[in-house]
Length: 511
Image 1 (cartoon, rainbow, N blue to C red):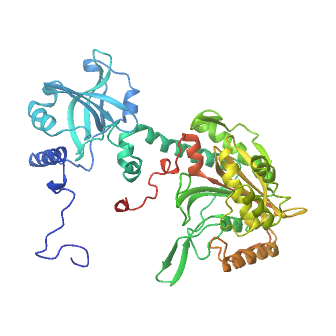
Image 2: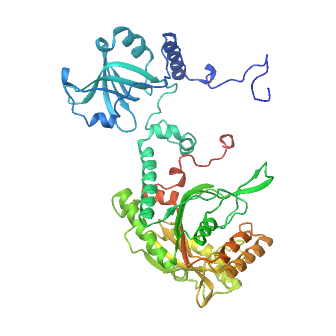
Image 3: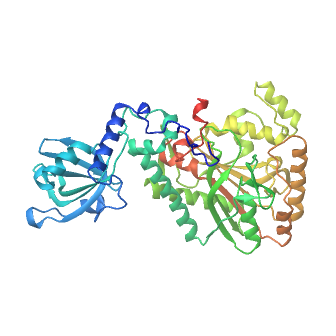
């Protein structure tokens, strides 16, 4: 092989995707029809075709008869095909709707009907049709074709809706076929788009400014996670794909942008599960002169509006249960929630050893969690989170696992932080943000100590962020919302891979 990857002179090319040995009978037949089209001087993949109306627009027109029928041109994929001899009926789908076409030999020409329509056109092909918009004798809105053009020859047959593509791994790996075969999947991603649009409208109407912050960062931070690393060749600089937007957005608060938000991708080098994907979409918004209580109110108002905009109601069905986004959401301290579900009072068990011993006495796995705060977090994730159905704010979290949240007055182990849970998973995380540069620096030093003692998810010290805080930051509340998980709730999907168009998968040859 040459450096460019092409075969050297005299060297055989490896079998390609059109090698007959790799094609089934249907695919070989379609490849033959493609050759027939070209042999007749027809381009099976034209750059453009005639189209005057989308199918939705065509369906909104009033049909006519004979000379008074509207003359239109529509285009789409053939999704149904019936051959009746001298005439055929088909249905075209262009994404806006479906319409029937009638192709008659005496209208389109006997030669074209025989040598193109009958000999070369298949289910799944794209077609442009010009003709009259009429009603058939059965009352079906139909384009009576006067001319047709093949707009794109499909070399593979459409998958059978019920049997052709049901394996989840195959669906995610070939999402284009999944979308083609399953209209309900297309609707999930339309719903996702409506969700993001509704969030933007809500925040924009309140005077928030949408911004963009770096994806490549010299120091990552804002979450407890391991990053993906990369390298800038010209600058000889190691960089990280961001794990959060937080520290850059708070720099903007320092700079006088009092209400900011960003919707974008974060990347965390962690495991996958029904609610985790290494690349995911997040909303973060920050508001000066607010705190975590104010952010609670802002968030529940936003989610109620999004539910109504997207689903038409605040009562949303999810996996056999109803999730109500009608505010106000239930509020409970993290201490009370853990006590209710485990019988353990984390305030009474305020020493790591005491909490670990109490958990072990109840047969609970304490794993390798290195401190009291992480033990508390494990109790939350194992015994509280899965049991929450309606949205619930859990607040007052351990300081040890919240390095950017302001402390609770009079409670040195706790911070002003909440997480929102619904349908058995975390949807949002928020703080009253630290605006004291000395406090923040001490938190960073604590994280540095943890990193030096084996905690790979502890934060790096970000001196530039500390310097930003020395210029002064007003009291501020901030919040992150997982767009993928929110879409799971609103679309009634059990797995995050169902709401990400191209989720991360292991290599196909790994099984």
